[in-house]
Length: 289
Image 1 (tube, rainbow, N blue to C red):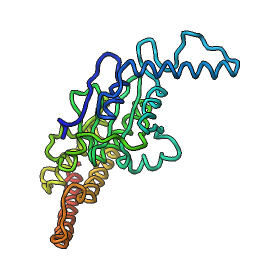
Image 2 (spheres, rainbow, N blue to C red; image 1 turned 90 degrees about the horizontal axis):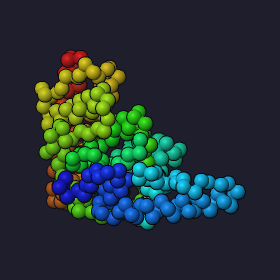
Image 3 (cartoon, rainbow, N blue to C red; image 1 turned 60 degrees about the vertical axis):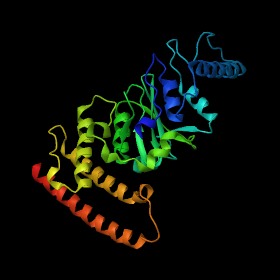
Image 4 (cartoon, helix red, strand yellow; image 1 turned 45 degrees about the horizontal axis):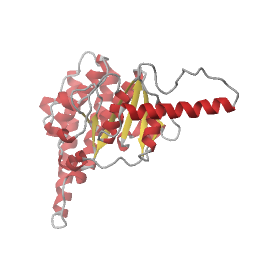
């Protein structure tokens, strides 16, 4: 599936263009397109200022810098053509849903220090498509919450993408994609240099792998860099992720009427086994702490 994901890598200061194309999964925008949109926005803003009697320096642009960095206005206007809109995650209408279940959204666009990047969902699977990465990087659903918190701490402005994204090749492979086939390094992703947050994400990944596999003996020992509260958060996120995958098994596994009753019984047995594995994993982690 990863090979089917369209991923533009960083060239010059074109991260805004890369973010849009990575979001839409195709080379839909060029630097010239964005420059034209920026000029049109500048023109409209100048007309409004003139009508209000306010003068603006002729050489000043609020939509593209001298270095070629584009504003949120350019990003937003570009997406309007596709019937998409951006809403800050701090907006009252979505702040609670983003805090509780961000994985139910379709994509996020982020900006900090004039760098734009996007992470989005294919089917039920999330990937970080930052143009500075060598390749798309998997983000498990419950890691999304930690990732967003991490970005907020680093000063990022984060916008949720609303609307229907265009169909893409990667969507065709999402139903058969198995995150457990990835290594721990490619499962977890972070843009930051904050070791404590990274250690927490890595710990969640390792704990989740132990719980999913049912191997409570391999439960990781918490890093000294993870404090008590972070460790508790890690355990909770691991538990949530197990519940998430249980609830979404039907999205990736075909079912038939003939075997429906047997499937229900098997799922109940699996839930009991995973619940016991989770309890054992947490017990062993407590002993290691």
